[in-house]
Length: 156
Image (cartoon, rainbow, N blue to C red; front, side, top):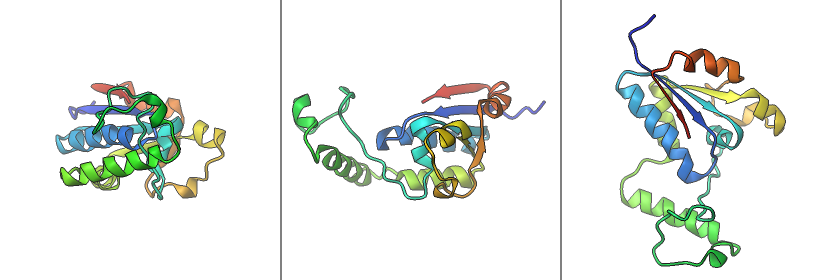
């Protein structure tokens, strides 16, 4: 058994704001010498697409800081999600935060293993060719082989 620490992450969300945690944590752990595997399932699979179209929404996220108080009804209006996504990307860029694409590339360069849930790919009739290179396809059993020996397991 290796002395190298292991981090296992389950990524289930497919929005811009939820794409950051698995890639930030994965790349940081890899930089610290951890062996890292991220299992992307359900909506988290959106994070592995070549053409990212991730958006952010404040609906269902009362903790999201808004530039001004905004009633939930206004947040549901057409175009608000696109506006909030644009605002979030601009804020991140102004603060020097790396993009999801950049963080994802950092993970790949650090040999973080990306596993796409085969059951979910089949369930949603996703085309494996739509995913970035280097993604492996497997099921929960494949993930448990790694997670069963992980020092840390996170569900995001």
